[in-house]
Length: 326
Image 1 (cartoon, one colour):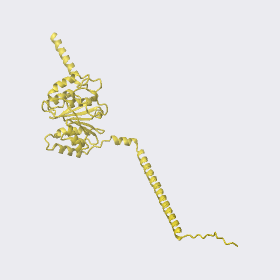
Image 2: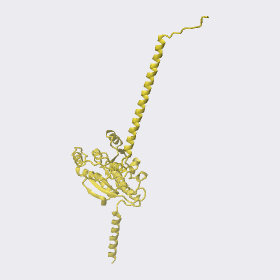
Image 3: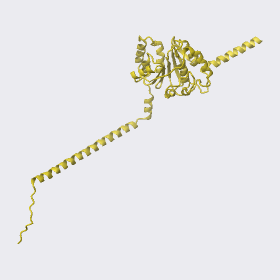
């Protein structure tokens, strides 16, 4: 018999066995972590989907009528709060404050709005924050001649929506300006028009476009400055208010226009010319309250009683001539 000299003895060192076990343990740990992460991802994603579905279902099940009512409702301030605001605003020590008799009619007009009220104000004054508070949940826009003060008020009170405008008129030019407007009453200075495209010298046409698209329910003219010949006066805002009110398309067709400091000559003359005496419903020594109705686009007279007055005068003149001839 031959001895097999090629026979080899292989011994496994204990270190090699330990290393294999270690690798398997690491592999097992890695697979466990991966499985756990995968399960957590599935659970989290399912939770988000369930939450999203619930939210979507809740939103889409709200009746359309309820949504409409929510958007159009105009929650009013409690009467006690309104009265308190009016009281303290009129009792302020500010020299330029409005008296209670002037503030109260404006507050009443705002409360009569059945939907959120659109309130346009010419002039940033002592009552600026009061108007914003009284027109709760409504749209309140301020127009002022001083761009720096308008920017300051917006920065100090972010809830204020103010724009500046450059007035090109002077108090001493009031009669000439009105005469020119009357000559152009069938062209650029019509009582019903979109002022954004108007070339009438008394029309304010450099405001943001959306200002001309709003159906204003209440307008207050409390600016710009007046009282001396070279002051801008209030002819432009009075004319503009008259056109905006008569060009109104929506709502109940009526606009309350308040003019402060109506005792001034140019303010009174402009008010009579473009807001009209027949529309004056109440007045104090310093405040005039007009209620204007929308007009047809074919109308070319600001005041309706002028034609009647002219006709009456013509009839009287004709009657007097007939009597004289007989």
